[in-house]
Length: 226
Image 1 (tube, one colour):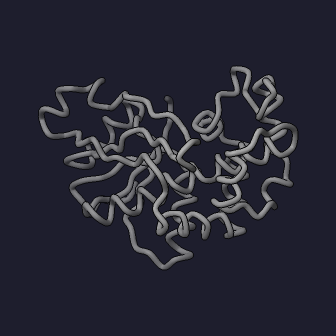
Image 2: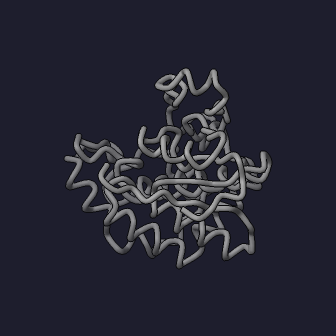
C-alpha cells in the first residue's frame, strides 16, 4: 500500500474482510470503517436481501476500543444522483471491459456476485452454478448497453432463457457500480481514505475516479498467503 495520508479508512466493496486484511489495515490506519451489507431495492417489489452480520460481531473488542467503526447504511432504493452515476459507469467501455475481465478471471468477484458452487435460479430455471457462470461470461453481455432502468424493468417480469441471463448480468453490474459509488460518497462525506484487498474493485474505482476527475485516496492491500 502507498503511505496513508488519513488516520481513518473505509473498507470496500464488501461489508466484511479477512482477519489478516483487518490486521494489516489496523497497522496502517487508526480506525477502519465498514458499511453494512448492501441490499438494493430496484423497485418497490424487487431487490436484494440484506444480511445482519458485521465485522464488530467477530471483533467486539475492536469496536469497544474504537478501532472499528461500523453501521453505514447503503441499502434501499437508488437515489437519482446515484442512479445517474451508475449509468455513467455502465456506459463507459473501459469500465465495462475491466468488470467483464474480472468477472471471468477473479473468483472473489464471482463469489461476491453469485454462488457458483450451488445451483442458481436464472429466471424460472434452476441451472448448475458452473454452467450459469460460464453462460454469463459471454462477450455479448460485455457489449450490451445496460442501464439501471432496463434492469429495473426486467426485474418486474417473469424471465426465462437469454433475457433472464441478461437480467442477472445487469444486476451484477449495478451491484458492483453501486458499491463503488457508495464508497465515493462515504469517503467524501466522512473524510476517509478508501481501502480494499480486491485488485479488481480497486481498478474499477480508479477508472471511475480518473474518468470523472475525482480525487480520492485509494489503497490496495495485496493479499499474499491467504
